[in-house]
Image (cartoon, rainbow, N blue to C red; front, side):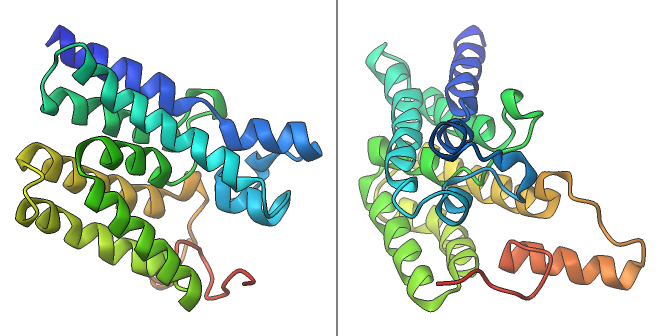
Length: 210
């Protein structure tokens, strides 16, 4: 239990480092906390189109370290998965951002790079296709839904598949929670907004510019 707890704490602290927020402040004096998400995609639209590249690489590295360090110390793949998913949780609900954050795809990619590289390639492909179709949230959600099965069929192991199930659950929870944005008081309008949050990752039907 102590080892699992250490992996959770280490992963969470690594993931919680607010790289997008720090980059926005340093590069343009922009506070991303006023936006719906504090992530590389918001950095893209609010600061500079090149800025998400180094920030994304750092965020992927956080997932790599949180996953690889337990393995390097001789721990099991299950503990490595725990570290990787904890980094995702830290990224999404950072203690430095009043428990707000991004969507956790970058640290999850880092976890997959260590434990199941084909899954990382599949997720990158989904991001590219979603970008081309201007439907990234929808394509990513569907990919995360099928990823546990892909991991099992591809020989990635039950532990990694369970981690992918956890990532799907974290993604759904984060989208619906939406950094604690208020919901409409009308029940019908609330259901519509929650549906849009789940599939479009936003409260309205509008899509960001290409």
